[in-house]
Length: 330
Image (cartoon, rainbow, N blue to C red; front, side, top):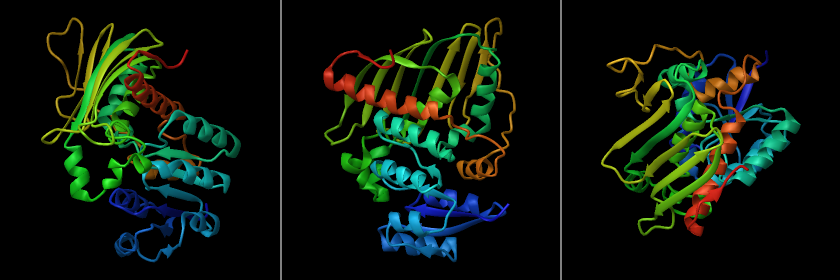
């Protein structure tokens, strides 16, 4: 197969993980980059090496002679850049959230059906062995029918954003939303990736903490599959903590992003047990992109997950604004 040429739109902090993973894959070349900040490009080139610099996202996409693009731009830039890439025949790896609302997700879905391009989202948890082990248990119905789900993601988000200088996240014009749309997207995507549940009714409460975007969010969801759930996404915490619990008719699974205190506890067993070892073949979104381009697999995250993340986020904001329970899918 010919060399796979990759372009980067945005080369801030998150881009370096994708860059390093791509550089370690044989037959892949990082060939182009655009970022409106000159200093970010200069820093990126020190690690990327001989990479052509473009003057705009449009120029990179249309004249870069690329096979795929990695999108690391502010959230509201994703949709127009995804659209431009797909219409120019390029595969896409986009950072989370892929899009900032359900309408955008539907438009991307239509374009993907038409163009047959690869679409990968930077949801790292979907490549971690802990979550893949849990997914296998759920797919094999060892937990039985899911009846209840609950969990939270909490971090010192406000100070992290301030300290890293990425304060565009506080501006809805660029962020599309606050902690729910940003880090919360990882948690919500993980929920749908593992369970396959479909939201039908949503009720929420949001604390903006005196800012323009949401900081702390609590929400309750009824799912089509008759399960119910309660969740919290917090932008205030001394550190970082996360947990997702999934109760089925035969037991419960507890999961966390870094593997701490993860377990499965079946009815009839006195003690929880460690999740079985599971080693996924694909370790990162970047590797996933390349394996998909080569024709070896389909993207790790089905587009249905991306749709549900966008849909649920829309309904959480809508429920809070209208102060009532909101219907999602009929």
